[in-house]
Image 1: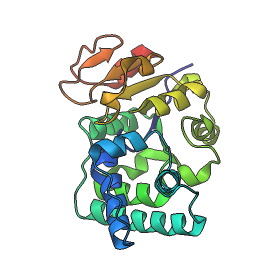
Image 2: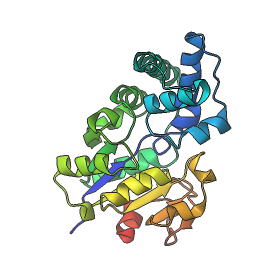
Image 3: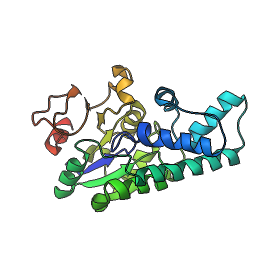
Length: 245
C-alpha cells in the first residue's frame, strides 16, 4: 500500500499550545471566576496526564475540594477557558512549530490527504487554525476533535474515526504526535507514528516512546532524530516519513 495521508495532532504538535495557550487560558478563567487556583508551567505539566480540558478541571477541583464538582460549574469554567484561549490566539501569542507549515504544504503538493486528530474542542482548534494556518485549511480533508468521540486519547477512537472518514487503511497513513498518550492512541489504531517532542513531552522518560517510528525534537531545519533512522536532509520530509513506513 502506498503512502496516502498524514494525520496531525494539534496541541504540542502544530504549536506549543499547552504551555503558552491552554495553561494561560485556564488561569484567566479561574481568575475571572474568583477562583484562587493558578497552574504554573510545572503544575500544568503534571495535569496533562488527564486528557481533555473539562476532565482536567473536574479532576483538579475534586483533588483540592475533596468531592466531585457540580458539572455545571465545570462546564462554565471550561467555556470561559475556551473564550480566553481564543483571545490568546487572536492576540498572536502562539506560532506554528518549526517545519510544520513546510510539511503540510509538501504533503498537499504531493496529493496526500491530511487530517486533524485531537482531543481539543472544535472551537479551540478553529481559533488556532484561522490565526496560524488559514491559508492551509484546504489541505485538511477531515477534522476529528474531542467532541466527536466518546473516548479521548490515549484511546485510539479518534484515529480510528479519522481513518474511517478518510476511507484508508492505517498502513497507508502516518500520524504525527508530540506525547506518549498521542503515540499510544496512534499505535492502537495501527498507525505508524512520528513523535515531535514538545516542551512537556521532552520531559517524559524516553521509554514511553519505544513504539514510535521515530522521535525528533522538531520537524524543521536542524531537526535532531533522537530515536529512529538518521534524517539525511536535516529536516523531516515526506521522503523520510515514507522511509519509516
